[in-house]
Length: 448
Ligand code: UDP
Image (tube, rainbow, N blue to C red; front, side, top):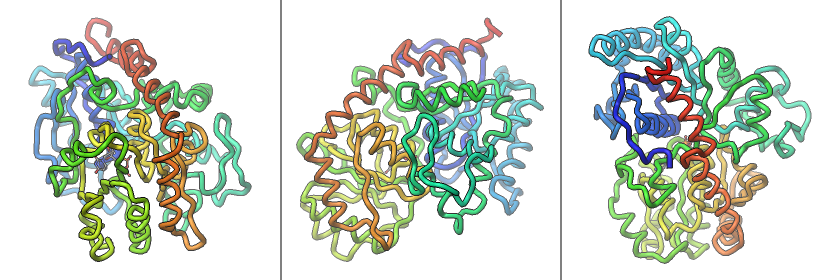
């Protein structure tokens, strides 16, 4: 495993700049830790001070960038002006204290970070935190090959199954709510060709055709995923257990003990990530679908969603279920009792389930989740996708049926293949590990 050997620090210093959302912080932090384990000094820049009060996370330093005084209306414009002001100060300060910065590793949705890096004389490396398939679709929209509204379905894209409208990212069909997001996502490609490195949180074996398709379009992309701490991919390796940088907190601490007390593959883990907002009716159907399944379940209902739970549901299902406001998802997915993941198919959750061999009930809500769900069900075949009724609801009967299929059917066997391939990609000399090694070697002082 690539992270096994911890080498002494050198002077080479990378600044990591994630978009301040959970699904973007997690892969950036894990990638940073991998780089640190190979001898680089890495500082992760965080815009969020309330939840993240620490200055160190294992081998990675955390530095808070204050947004005081910068309150532009446009969210990204605001981030851009903060970074433009603060980054030169941070780079200068680190240079003076003997840790000169060589490279800025930035989230691909902040392409302007490359210009700032260049002005400061730094290498620029961007990290895409969504799948290569989804990014290819955004690229198609950017170059005008896919228009909105979509003119003809199904959509045919090299290396992908035929895509119906609802298999595309939601920004192609929910134009009313998100008229401009596609432009923002297309902008990721404005200067990708100029970056020194373009990393993706995926692995070659998972998305080989679409990755090769992007490379053929002159994007020299390097998969470095799955960005997951090695202890979860290989039980022999004991990483620091303190692996996450969570923006939410669990209300109940003993859920792992509760999992310990359950039988192998007997529990349904349910989570819709850090952002999804469910309607009350949908919450009710999920609750009753879980109840009807008659399986044990651990359900993450964030604080802001709790009031949508049907009355008395918690009391009535105490024997079978546990509801938490947050959990350490990787620990839950890696636990022997977890038999199925009912998920919104955020890219991190999808990669985590794939890499840990957990079959999924895919219940996408928006953004790239619809496309990820399509791949889970029809390409990787590690789960089933729920059907939505005419009113846009997934009924309790449908949920019960899908849970039964995943908990009691044959899908689990197919998950082993992806678990093995994910681990191999991250193992020493694996496809992703080689890309990380190559990056580190280029940045190390001896080879500059
Ligand atoms: N997560 C977690 N605990 C929870 C729910 C989610 O640690 O209770 C983590 C999960 O492991 C993943 C991230 O939060 O790494 C969510 O990212 P994802 O891309 O799946 O969804 P998003 O929140 O961006 O919609």
